[in-house]
Amino acid sequence: MNTTRTVYVPTPDGTALATDVCLPDGTRPVPSVLIRTPYGRDAHRAELRGWAAHGFAALAQDVRGRHGSPGEWHPYRGHETVDGAATVAWARAQEWSNGEVVAVGASYAAYCALVTALAARDTARDTAGEAARDPGPGADDLDRDGVPDAVIAAVPALGLAETAREPGGPERLWARAGWWAAHGDRRDSDPDALARALADDPRLLEHLPVARLAERLAEGLGRELPSWPGLWAGRGRGRLVALAPTARLPLLAVGGTRDPFAEDTVALWRGWGGPSRLLLGPWGHRLTADPAAPPRARVNLGVLYVRWARAALAGRLEPTRHGVIALGDSGRWRSAPGSTVTPDATPLDRPETECRWPFGSPTGLRLLHGAEFSADPDRPVRSDDLAVPADGDRADRCLLLSPPLPRPLDLAGAAVARINVTADTPSADWAVRLTALDPSGHADPLAFGIVRRTGPPGEAADITVPLGTLGRRLPAGTRLRAEIAGHHFPAHARNPHTGEDPVTATRLAPSRRTVDSRGSALHLPVVARRRYVEPAPEICR
Image (cartoon, rainbow, N blue to C red; front, side):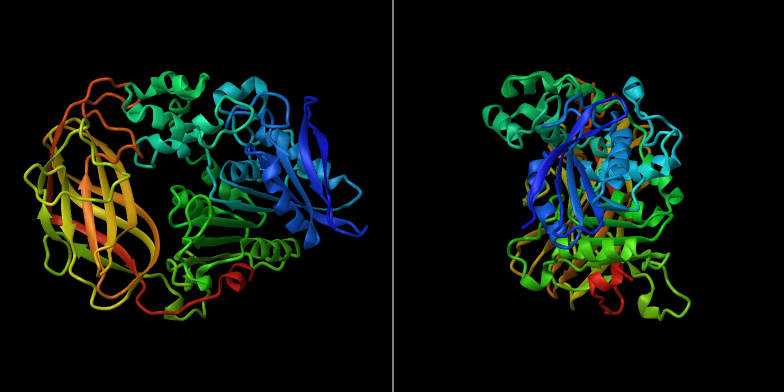
């Protein structure tokens, strides 16, 4: 039986990090798997035993300043690169190690794995003395002993800017408030902290300015959150994705089409310089499937990770880019758009067909109401309610509906909305929410995107709103409902429409909006011909 023991791994400045080690039976040297996490190493005990049962030495480490590890934790600005490199080098030097290390992690732990993997590719130093300037992910004095041989990065949260804001600008209020309430400025975690605070103060997230929300949140938490304002200070994003082409080691990027960071996962996979594989399933950020999903739609990620790690360490992966995407809960998978196409590939292997659904068309999206509407931040369209107004007397959104699908439709790839719009305010957010209505009228979220535009009031503009990467099978009879709104609260902070920064603004103003059907359309990645693959062989070839 595999047993777990706790050791303390030294780092260059003398800080010793709490690390659980689970070794397989036997005495021969084996490869190692390293998980560095701020969420508590104890939660990985079963995972460590699973890796050990398959012949890997498995390590789970509390990052500096969290749970069992001393020091101070500065999310995305601390010691992750240097501490990760020190732990990789330590693992390589142990008598039970054969010298091979796979860095594994999900969410923030995926960030830890990635910055360690990219350490030798960046010249910035990641030290405590430079933490305040948001140092790069690597240190120029690290040697190759501190860089892993392969990386598994699941639902990666790639940085402060990537997690705090959408690529198009709007602030992710609900998710960041929840994460900071649960993990920020403390050594341990309290996952239900925001839920309790909202139970006591249901209008908590309406507090203005957003930059001082932590002061009100502290009343419910009973503790301060001094790092909250700094969360919104950084706007530079894409640093790890920009470094990805320099990587030469294998990458398995795992994400979910319902995960808010799915596009970062796809971008990382597309840009990676070494052999890269993508597994994009019908999951959210927790990588869990719908409990009602049929058994055929479920994937044993643990077994798949082991199979991929063995192939990566053995050098059996093709030096190309391959990926698979699930068609919702159907149990069917397709090659991901962007996978390497070999010279002998058939047309069935090539990318999806983009299908255009024009606004104001009986065969596209018919306008129900709201060609003109009011986006009022005092009465924002809510992200947690899929119900829509029955009429347009006081329209707060533009509402469109398609006719029933005449036949089943498979969607796999990137979707966008291209809209011609006007706002009478200098700043306006444009949120597009796409919902699938089954023949009984049940609403199921399909896609979402939001962008911020600044410009002269009253000036018409053509705007592209990315809706993410879709992987769904829609049955015959499904209708597509599209909503175009000015807010998506509380998932996103309200745009005050005054031109002020939504993080510091205290004054709100309504905004009159117009959506011109001419030139506006929804573009969906329709799979023209059905050809399916099995996920494990595809990502391990």
